[in-house]
Image (tube, rainbow, N blue to C red; front, side):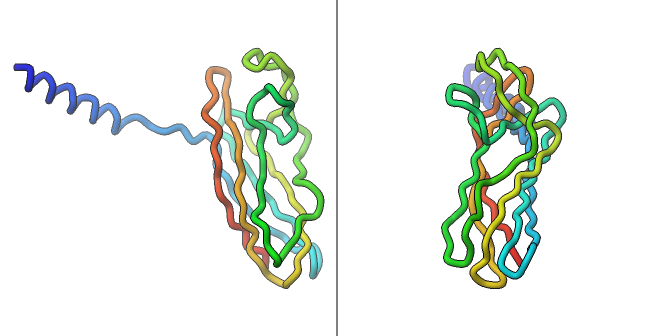
Length: 149
C-alpha cells in the first residue's frame, strides 16, 4: 500500500510540475541603424507584460537591481558615451522603502557606437529585474548579438 501511495504522489507531482509555467514577463529585441559611415545607434527594446515593470539604469544602492548593459570589448567598434534611456516613472515602493525609477509596457535603450570597420556585430548582455505589485522575480541576464550593416 505504501508503494502505491508513493507512486501516486510521484505521478501527481510530476504532472503538476509539467503544468507549472516559468514567468517571463519581459522580452528583448534589438536593432541597429547606421547614422554615418563611422557611427551607428543600437536599440535595445524591452517589451513588458501588463502589470509588470523593469527598473531604470539609475537606481540608487539599497533598491532593486537596476538594468545594466555590458558590451563585449571589440576592436571593430567603441562605445560613444553611456547607454541612454527615456524618462522613467518614479514612484515610492514600500518593498524597497525608497523612490525608484522604472518602465512599464516597453522601453527602448540606445547606445551610440563608433565603427572601426564598415560592418560588425555588437555582443553583450543585459541584466535586469522585473516586479509587479505582488512579487519580484530574481534578476536575469540575457545575452544579445546585434548586427550592424
